[in-house]
Image 1 (cartoon, rainbow, N blue to C red):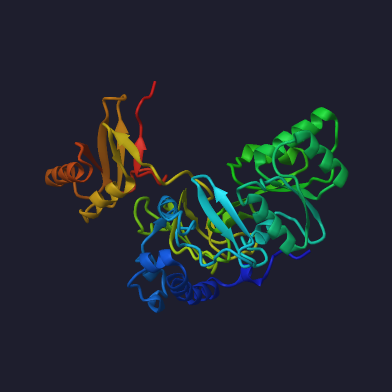
Image 2 (cartoon, rainbow, N blue to C red):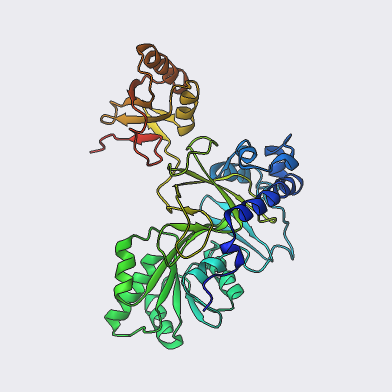
Length: 415
């Protein structure tokens, strides 16, 4: 049995990086020329010069809420907000909707969302039947997995969501090799099958996504003969990363360029530090450049023990948008970053909001080797100028603040 989906997975780091940096300026130029939104966002950018990670990091980040705002503003003229390089017709067989509402196009390329790689890593192989319980209604999840399975040479039963007893019956009679869907629904199906006294001996593997997949649930499946693996994907970007048999983080997909940035900014963080996942996709139909997912993660050192050489991330670690309301005013992670940038002595900053409701207190914790009283006073003034709120300053030694990606910590009591 072949271990790898294709040769791209075992390229040297240098070979992969060189290939990505050849594709990057082409994709930036393509986005400028074929996406009205990026023609504006990247106005004045010399695409041919975006040939390094540093050059990429100088481009603006477009976050999901900004994509939604553009779509909403242009509903009457362009439902995609100018981000899609495709128009309605034969080149766009389907349109999907995600909560917001955000509309996403589906192009005609086989394995459009590149899910086959993750399905393969979960143990599925050509000629097998897959029970797909992701939704086929409104959202693209069902189609994402089905098109990937077809590209792999598998047959799909379109189970969708709900109707648990019918799901059990279909599994018992069709005898699929495994399941694709959310982990919680698989647990419901397995429990229902046990309640009905219906064995499901062929369901020995699963690819799950869309929810947290804690080790306790993974072990619960393993005790019942099901090897569950997870992947991380979005309707905007397709596959971003996937789990392997090593179970040491998630390996990045070969069709994306991923950065981890400090929340509220576009500034890459040092390797290992938790930050927001920013993704540039090489999909020409929906050419998102530096798209802020709003999800937190961190890069793991080294490569996967399975022999896959791409970068690994820890997986989903929470949300990067930590905007909170303090004394009736919204405070954003970007404001904390603005304050910190004014002072080169500050290594990292974290705003802690505490107290009870209606009695909010703000403390800006900053990592710095300088503890002069004058710096604390200047920081306090900057807090008031940027946020329009008063806040105290606490200076701590570098390395003191938790590495959890939080720029704003809401520690208030809501009882």
